[in-house]
Length: 238
Image (cartoon, rainbow, N blue to C red; front, side, top):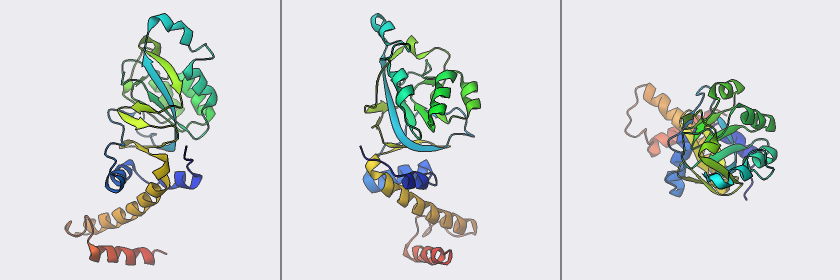
């Protein structure tokens, strides 16, 4: 597993998911690195960056339900609450089932105490008002009253999963903001972070020129003449 440096994490906090997904497509040909069909419980508190800690659910089978109850030490969700490191993003493959909640207020509180920076699931969440009050950035399909054992069994942690149809490996870097959730392969994170910061600077300069009345043609994307003007401007910023 490729570790992501604290410096890369800090850089990625300055890069929106729109820029990240654009870079992953244009530079690396990765077409779908944003998790579709989910949104933030609280749009005012939805930004995070961190490595993925994964949990995989499977469909419920009633004859084994009791053996994997949350009170059983072998329960994968219980293991996640004991092992997830601070700074992680908890990413759950809930088989796309939005009718049940992966976390409620108690488990979310535990995640916050562990130092988790965000939660992502392709299913529902319970106790959404309490989760909102906790300030835990959480993306999901929406509120759901029933608990996950109504339909799902937590099967394993720290394995590759499919969240919303997007492959997520443990340690992949997960970035969330108002536009959604992007998944960066860990070995590309440092390069994507630097390119993202550079792109944001260029896009900001272009946006200012357009706001001043500049023509889109030659500015978006910038031609060689405008790139030269941008480099000159950047040099003046020190």
